[in-house]
Image 1 (cartoon, rainbow, N blue to C red):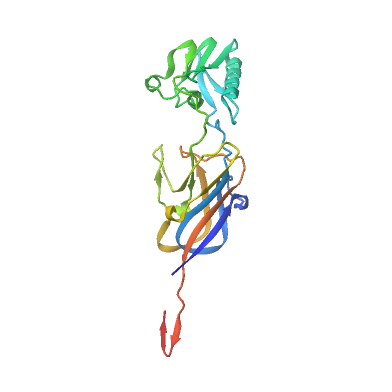
Image 2: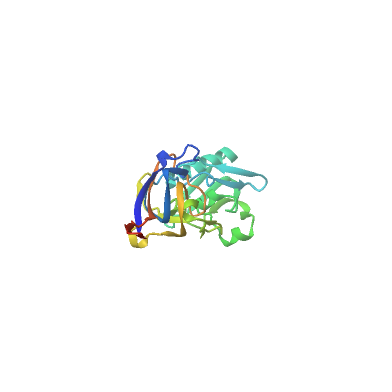
Amino acid sequence: MSETNYVIINSRFRANYSKSTSDFTFNLGESLEVSEVAIKSVSMINAVYNVPANYNFMIVSNGAVDSVLTVPVGQYDITSLITAVETELTNIYGGTNTITLNSITKKLNFTTTTPLRYKRSTLSPLAVILGFGDNVEAQVAEYVPAFPAGSVDAPFLPSLEGENNYHIVSNTIGQGQGSLLKNNSKKPIILTIPCNVNFGEVINYEVNEINLNKRHFARPINIQDIDIRIIDDAGEDIDLGNTQVEIVVQIISPQIAPYSLSGNQMSI
């Protein structure tokens, strides 16, 4: 026999040594014997910027000197991003720098007084957001284009949709079982949540009983603390801006059967 309980984990009540609301430890208040566990639902605000930290810069060059172009971290539409990049180009090179969105192809064109090029996307993540992705030229050349130019067309569409998925990671629940990510690292992913709402809206994701990703333990284990991390598709911790996360965990515990005494015999 077994007993099913539900634990509500809210990042607001995380342990005081936790790093953030997307990387925290929750104390259950008691030790529970667990034979099976799964995440039933997650509620969180989509508060991750579409130009986050570590993705807000690109390396540009006039052919002689490399410069780091950095825009403030934030939630952009194409107009505000164009303005931010134009401003930073002018701060770096002066002159006139104009970025236009082609009304037909919806791709960007950079027209600058100072001929420029950018370092390939592995070193310039903002370039990918602007539509300068990993094309064939970028894979074989350090800079794109090979020589600085006063007019540069992005080969791809700008990418401002933000993250496609968030992943809940927990060593406690996962017990060492890993899932393979894009960068070939393994992390104990318990649940993947599609990000299907706009920035600032609440993601409410619930898993029905049939599709629960249940973790079965060969032997019951005792759990008192549950670690939670929320990562993106690249395996990096997301920044929720201190907004809160609520996770409902289904815990199944073994239940000791009642026993009865009959004469000198005990049956269980």
